Length: 206
Image 1: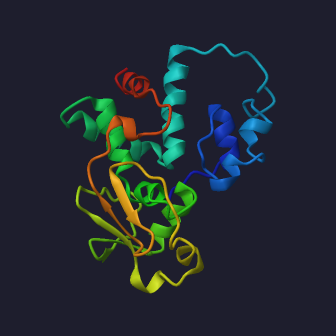
Image 2: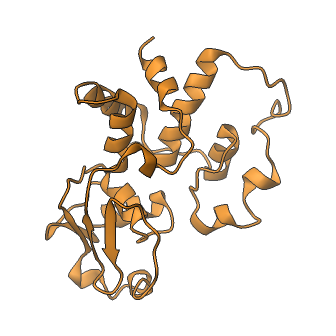
């Protein structure tokens, strides 16, 4: 299975922003973006001038790295968004937000998207009562997301009980029952990252 192999902190430094790829470390003093706010490599302190193409490419890479998506799949989201009603950029981000690994992350089940992707891969999550182990599975309005019954005694899931979790308005999650639900489709305001999706659309439209 293809996957991103670059060191997570290195990816954040390359994009110049926190991508929150390592959970709690990203909010601590150990965050490499705060400790070494330069592009990795021997030319990291070099010239800052960038072209329009470079800006577009960096924006695309930032989104791909944040959600842990490779190029072929990301291109697929763009092409699917072009066939949907509404603005292409917003439709693309809505599709990506609805990935099961991201939904599990948004519900607070895991500390990072990478951890949530692993939780889904290991078969710990059910959708409408059926086990789903595909991180890219797209959820729909009304879908019930739960931690599998026979996995709830795992320490990381037991620690969720009674915890207060801040999540977007399009989701809900009961930390006592370890069950959540998709209340609505995510809107542009629900994406909490500073993303300029128009730059990505311009790049793919070249």
